[in-house]
Image (cartoon, rainbow, N blue to C red; front, side):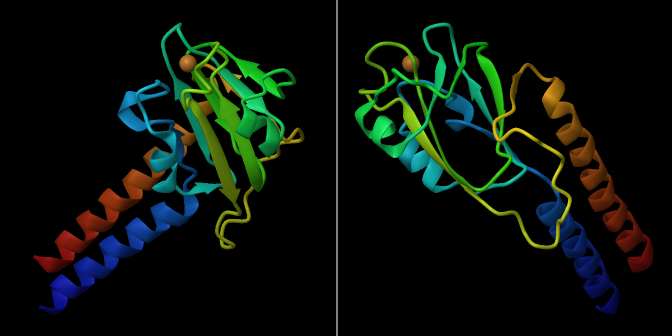
Amino acid sequence: MKMQAVLVILVLTGLITVKTTLAVQHVIGGSQGWEQSVDFDSWSSDQSFKVGDQIVFKYSGLHSVVELGSETAFKSCDLGTPVNSLSSGNDVVKLSKTGTRYFACGTAGHCEQGMKIKVNVDSSDSTSASTPDSGSGKDSGSGSESSSGHGLRASIGYIFVVGSLTIGLIWAY
Ligand SMILES: [Cu+2]
């Protein structure tokens, strides 16, 4: 019984470590991606966006991504003065500071049909003081090179969990 307790503690420690230190990559709209059929309001209500996280817009050529500069522009779908425009179909946007960011589809009529999303970025947990240098507030890259760092950190996290499990099992038997 005592050994099982040790195992549980080790695994929990590993999981908590992963949770608090890893930046998360949020694929907008989940498995459906950046598509008209998704209810982005309800999708985002289940998400917790933190500084250091990334959001990814995945979509077909019918769509694009326009970042808007204000709540007003977001509400009225005013795409006239975008902060940023993306169109690779696999657009990675880093959430480098707290605040609200607004995104809409650039295709005529899509924003009005609900293809827009408001992202509220909260500060990351106080324990992780490692905020990668990001001079500009909006560095958004397309492609996968900007997500490789996350992948590496994720691997380290998983190794940690597997390691904890292994040590726990060795202890238990
Ligand atoms: Cu669209």
